[in-house]
Image (tube, rainbow, N blue to C red):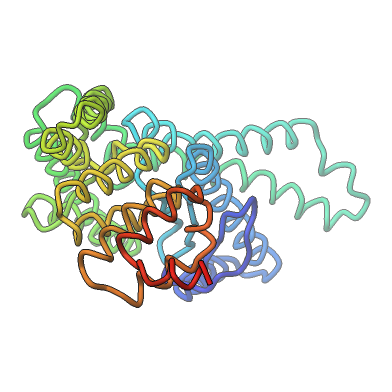
Length: 351
């Protein structure tokens, strides 16, 4: 994240860009009274955080390691790729849902007359301002984000829907082409009406859409479907059980082509399988890259030992043989391994 880490909630780190402070200063300057400017800046920050934590908590539910950045034009939640379009849609929709929920709470509090319970008239006025602006900003920000303009939340949901209704190439052209057209009109209207902030934001949002249309960037994963992935993984595991390592490798590599389709458990199964299969096929360098991403179970340690031995990486091999991970292998099997890779060590053990 390009920003300064300021705090964490539920193990979700929050970063702030220096440009976000400029944004708050800009908003604060819209009010002649400093108290109102400071309160408005606070409202903007709370609203953005609630919106982004909607995304982040949903991503955390799916164990995708989210983190939040407040930057010069709003907020951003980054996380690992979800395992399905459904999960993606839930994560995207959670942001506006959180914002609208906060708007609803503000409306209830204002309608109940909570500011009237503040004894100081000046503070009561500020409390009323706080609740009214909280309502307006969260409704505005949530509705704005639901517009079908990528990369806004609505644009991301539109893309997910388009990928189900059209071929991927046509869906990408439709989603990002539509966004560019709308943003061109928004930029022109903003600059002609003197709303330069709108014009600048529209141009800023237009650039990634143009990059995607030119083939210079990606709008997100295009999934074959989790059912297809599971079928390939199960096919690879069946082939491995039958001793057909070439077929197991082929099916496993096909399953690996779409990393966004992998849940954490499925990813672990796949990398373990690839590590062992590549070892059996004598592809030791490739095998090590997968074994390094697998849990250190005895079968994985044995494969790593074979790879390091065949590649003459003696220092790494010795370190592994001296590790506690090697000790978790059964004593009989450890002796068998040492007879092959370090027979001299057995003599030392006998003495």
